[in-house]
Image 1 (cartoon, rainbow, N blue to C red):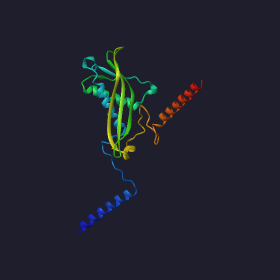
Image 2: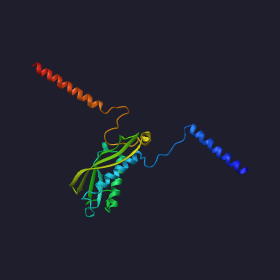
Image 3: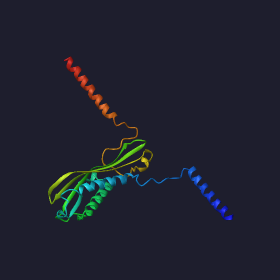
Image 4: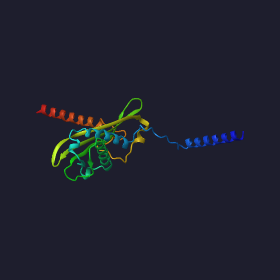
Length: 214
């Protein structure tokens, strides 16, 4: 009987503590792993782009070793994004058995790149859901010595769908993004084009009146 009473007291104490935490609003719930943050979503899109880069027919063992270099100027650099892209491309090439050097020593095939876009796009989905798309586009040039062998763009995307209510918890303003800025809250993306169209139509109308008067 004494043991039962002690267990009941312990359960009561636990229930009381839980009630107080809920009442004070201090209970937090861990988001499922599939709800990727901004950083994780961008990293996944970079990995997809890196996989496409590695498919280039020039990236074969006989053309190695390889060196990665950025085409971005100092004013365009985004340290986290470029460092992460370096890592995923190097890892993908190494996975395929290609030798990747940390810097040029002479005689390597050089892969130069610049990130044209690396950002998160939120799109509406059904039933209170939001489709979050990580997108990375890289302009890539492959050189053998001073000769340019190939140039083009590779794109990578990774997306998932999450409830609208958790989107704010997944966003990370500390992570810079390359590409069009996110629209501000309440901003209508159709307003400016409509204004421009209206002004253009008005100018055409005034020109027509002036021409007919002449």
